[in-house]
View 1 (cartoon, one colour):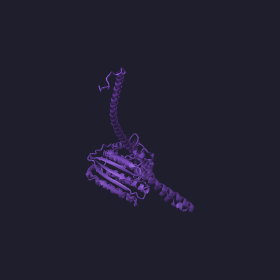
View 2 (cartoon, rainbow over the protein chains, first blue to last red; view 1 turned 180 degrees about the vertical axis):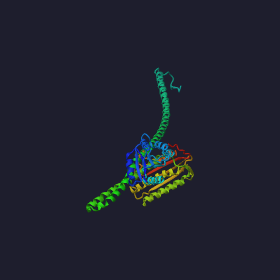
View 3 (cartoon, chains in turn orange, purple; view 1 turned 135 degrees about the horizontal axis):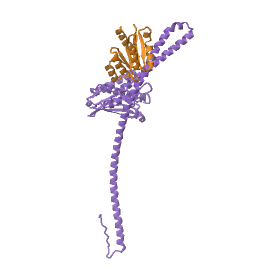
Length: 129
Length: 340
């Protein structure tokens, strides 16, 4: 069964990176990758409905206009059960604390350890089955 | 009146009429001379007083200048620390791409090789060799990118540690034991890196320093930095113009100053040129060849000692003779730590 992942980051290269990293999974139909380049775009996509079943949102924190923590709060008011993982270069205690407080499922610091990320995603997609 | 002038004659008779006039003139001159002498004496005394006042004022000014220098230095270091943290974070983002894309490209190349293997197999020998050569070079380059990316990542990590606001856990420790442990750790570390490494270690640990409250992990880090630098300088001198009689030596001493403790780390290595002494504690300043030092050791040490422990760290050195770092830690060193 295919499941969706939504990646939110204002840097377009992030999309390339994730596409390449998950090329096998995308090819064999494990995951369908979706991308949004701002918090607002992510909320719009979420409102329009994402197919197949969305299991997780991976969001950057430092973004212009709506930052990742704000987006996290917005998502949590609409879809409290949807796991959101924060991916950021700023691994400081304050951001980590806020992310936890707002209900982030995971706090991943850049450079991203993709092996670790894939394990996390596997757990989530197993849970969705 | 200061005195009188008397004249006498041996024989009876009056003085010539010009004599009293002469005498009066002389008396006038004498009064002037005496007055001048008095004024001169007074002036000398005042000059002495003025000189003393001037010396005192100059000393006060010099104290003030030193205090100001310390303040400026402290301010400079604090803002450099914040700048360092900002840069480190900004570098992490592009570094994320460099490292991940390098790893990915390695995988993609491997896939390409597997997919094209049947086609490459039917090529002529020369063409096959050319393809293999290019693929190998590409793989080598990608490994280099990944390796140097990891190196940059390591630097960024130590930059961030440097500026991390939260201070390490503080507890009462026996300073001499801490120094002894750091010395052993540094020595064995240096031996592990270079089996030919050798140095005479001298300890002069004052039992009166006893226990002191500090952040042991951080102070150990400072000691490892200073001892490591000492080892480096002494080894450099031994390999350079040390001469046959040269014995690399590192001395570590502790001393109780009642309301503070003092730790000295002294090596008889290459010394530090006077013109670079001001820059020693600045982030990224290093005299080591590229790749050997990050230039963060002393800057982190400065931060730990002054910001985190409210102490001081000073350096004394003579080129080609010695370098000595002196750390003073107050016993009630409550940190006036900025929250960066």
